[in-house]
Length: 163
Image 1 (tube, rainbow, N blue to C red):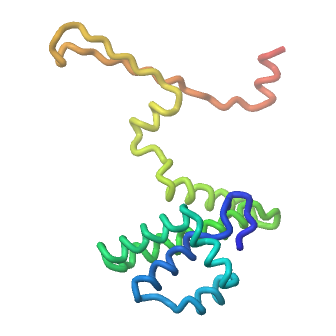
Image 2 (image 1 turned 120 degrees about the horizontal axis):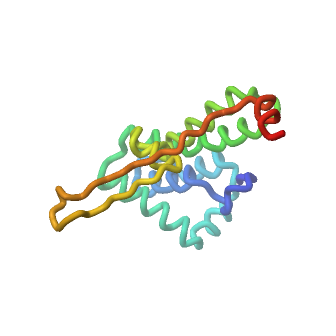
Image 3 (image 1 turned 90 degrees about the horizontal axis):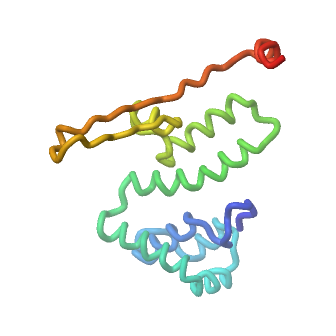
């Protein structure tokens, strides 16, 4: 179904989502799902033996039952599908570096991998934070933070200073 190196299964989350909707009575028929996902009916029987697929379908079913089918759930399913498109664009030599950079930044943001604030950003940037307790009260603690500043040096200046 999906031949990207990151996909370890023959099914994707969108298929599990569609099956969950069908089982909850609010989705397409199984025939429509088979046609849209370009799979064989026998594939569904195989997927039905995969514990990971069954767990994913049950997760989506409980989301639909307990929280209702919300816009946010639909958007999450669509975003997961669009990661495939993003992956292909990032690795396409014909796509400009600017577009690739924007896609990478967006993926990092969506994945929650950005620093939360400037304090954590500096801490994650290789800084050192030392806390010294000078007594039994928390008010007696002293914190010293040191962040090493990295300065870009042009190549010609660097080669002169090394010689």
